[in-house]
View 1 (cartoon, rainbow, N blue to C red):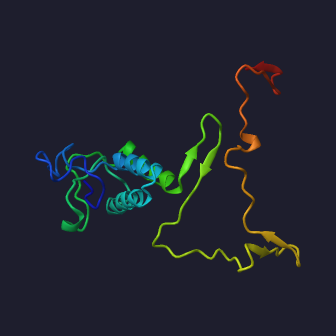
View 2: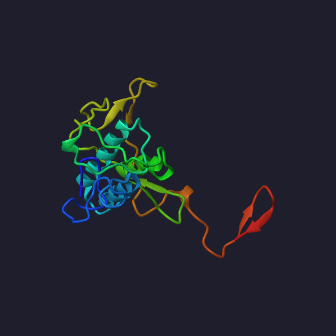
View 3: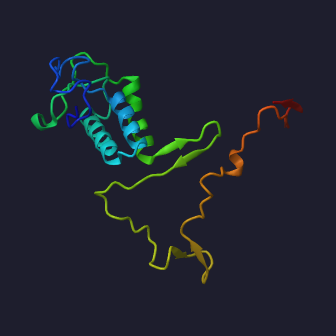
Length: 186
């Protein structure tokens, strides 16, 4: 089903496949963003990256204004994705696809019902390791503000199962005072 520009709505091996059909072989950017999110969530990181890179490559050919959909011709047959003749461009859900792909790539997860997020980005395999200016002395870097002192390069992490204190949500049934109005609310 993967065309090289994204995941098609129907596999090329199916009888009804038509790369210029609205729902029988075309590529929809917002569907691909959801597919990439699902792939990343269940551990198929390489596949999720492949889908994300394909959609972002296609976006470059559309002037970074993703259309509603584009034709599902194989990438090897054409130098650029083929626009669908009557698709809307830009289109709201397609415009949101790169944001979903960014969220997926950074592995940002909302910890509902708390107002907190977890970010677990992973560097894609083809990129070299980033030195980040750290010397080989176990992550310590010189503090330029105070000569002779050193700072840790990374902040200590909180335990994964304990939220940050600022993210605490009042329990149901408890009353909290609203300072500006002097009123209470549940």
